[in-house]
Image (cartoon, rainbow, N blue to C red; front, side, top):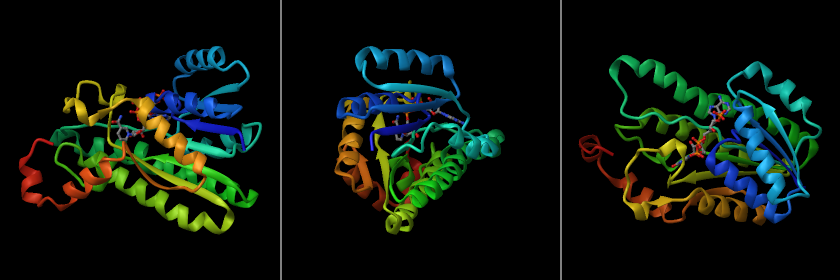
Length: 246
Ligand SMILES: NC(=O)c1ccc[n+]([C@@H]2O[C@H](COP(=O)([O-])OP(=O)(O)OC[C@H]3O[C@@H](n4cnc5c(N)ncnc54)[C@H](OP(=O)(O)O)[C@@H]3O)[C@@H](O)[C@H]2O)c1
């Protein structure tokens, strides 16, 4: 039960989560990302902080769909916990790049993680246990003019995770849909929000690690107050949202 695969492991939130899981007693980490150099630096740092953990790193592009199966087969084991934290955010789209941005958002935020987790789900279900964590976003709860391509892909990913949770329940596999609010990471660099709305990756990581420890799956808004903010935003009329710069 103490092994974990993270895809998109160079994400700032994922790194904080890995440190949190190492504190919780996870012993074996398989970290995958396109940037092997950055990942190796992180792995070295992790070994210094937690000398007893085993860490292996893998160059892996989630959007090379044809490599999913061979990548999973190449791991020394099918880990108990699989986390997908890869994501792509673009904002304020130009008409001329709408199609290109649609495809990129749909691929990185929905199609590729969805395909990967479908393979993971099959393997975990056959084994009869496992825990899947997918990083979606509160953005997927309501489309806004500045981020609707990201939002629509994350909406699909949230529902995929929610569906997988119900589908996999009889097989003993748990699924956690994580919906972070605004988190200060390289993804959100340069975006201005009121300081009380911005969380640090460590705060989100603690919430996710706590939910994993509970062992139940479900939908996690993190920090928790985003559940209420989004409940309010969902009620706003489209006329108001389309006039805003949100
Ligand atoms: N930050 C926020 O406010 C926020 C809010 C809501 C939801 N989220 C979601 O939470 C997750 C983590 O976000 P973050 O802020 O920690 O992001 P981040 O630091 O920008 O990291 C995103 C990671 O996605 C990886 N990635 C992108 N395309 C990939 C691909 N094709 N294959 C493999 N990896 C790929 C990148 O890894 P490499 O370039 O190293 O391969 C990058 O390290 C994302 O899914 C994001 O959408 C974030």
